[in-house]
Image (cartoon, rainbow, N blue to C red):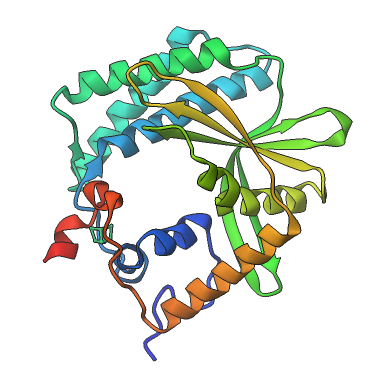
Length: 262
Ligand code: SF4
């Protein structure tokens, strides 16, 4: 059998797992063929630049010298400009809406203003972009980066995943999203903190009037068993070359749209 990047026993990531679960054909383009992106959706650019600005702010809280809103906005603007230039250079230009980059910058500034107005500045930041690589089960390694880890009272830790979204999250996402399960397991491993890790999504909506919402998520051992089961099933599917298209909303922002339709 052809040994591809994905059929070898490789360290997994949540991105790979969720990519196959959302659209196996996209997984094939990204991880088997390693095809270059055809374009960069502006939502991707906005999300990563917001992440960079929020992380810079949380790092400044940790250092005890909180950034001003102008400084946070400056990080955001620079991240947008740099990423757009890199995307252009790499032949995957950003697909801006009719308002262009100015509209995207205004939207991001409004989202960050909402975040800075609502976020609790008394939190104890352990770290941002905290890397991990651990065995979810014997022989099955996962790696990734946790957006933010906070220290709580009673020796508990809080893992935060920052999301930017056009809408708020439904109950299905809160109940079943496997990223929360994986990142709780990772933090427990990183800090030797079994049973002492909580998880929250910090959701910034891209709506006309942005909102910042904290969504606590609870996971059990049963969820971890399901995550392992998903990882095993995806690995089996990849080994057998199973990559059906999953047509849906994601197609509109897919970076392999033309290739998929060819
Ligand atoms: S265009 Fe749609 S079906 Fe095709 S790879 Fe992208 S997400 Fe999957």
